[in-house]
Length: 254
Image (cartoon, rainbow, N blue to C red; front, side, top):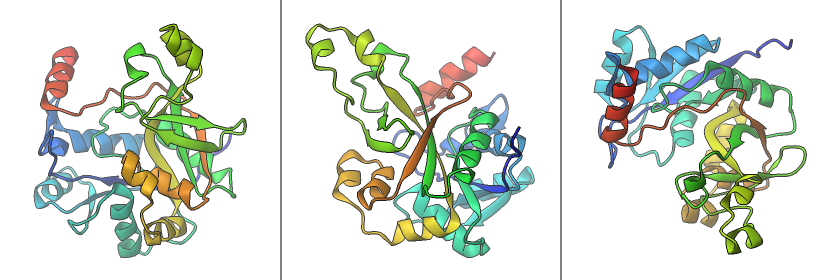
């Protein structure tokens, strides 16, 4: 067994959301969503867990359950930009591994958080590490919210897209979606990077690719920075994008 490397989890959390305002504070089994996420980071044996937010309501809740908060500006366009401010504010060492865990993933497995940190720690030449899982729903083949990733045989990301990649010409012609699914990986939005790379990333000009696809990881690929992708050790969590999703989840938990 390889020991888990020393790493810091930063949890970007914002109150404003077009589909679900206040989502980080929504209650799941009586606890706010952000507290569930924070607990997963602690279970993952992170050396430190920090919630990055620009909202006092979120900060008060996090401090109320004993979590650490770093206030950030409100004008960040992505979670990575918000994390870059945390890196600078906390004065993290350039070599410090930082794992970006989204504030709306209350059931992300602790195993996956540890895995992505170890993935990066073992690959000095890679700028970032992330996870993926085989596509398991036919409806996700053409679903733009199910982001796909294609890698080379060593796991280096070639491209991420909301489109169907790789495109199975014969499978689509025959409506054989199962064949298409057998070649596809769905990206799981968790990232590990070293502090020095986060600061370099946010200094890049945004690329046309990331703006077209609305996928921030494409900025790294555009500038030639390598991203390693591993298959997640544990099944990915249930996504919560709307109040209706949360209502269904709470009903299932009951």
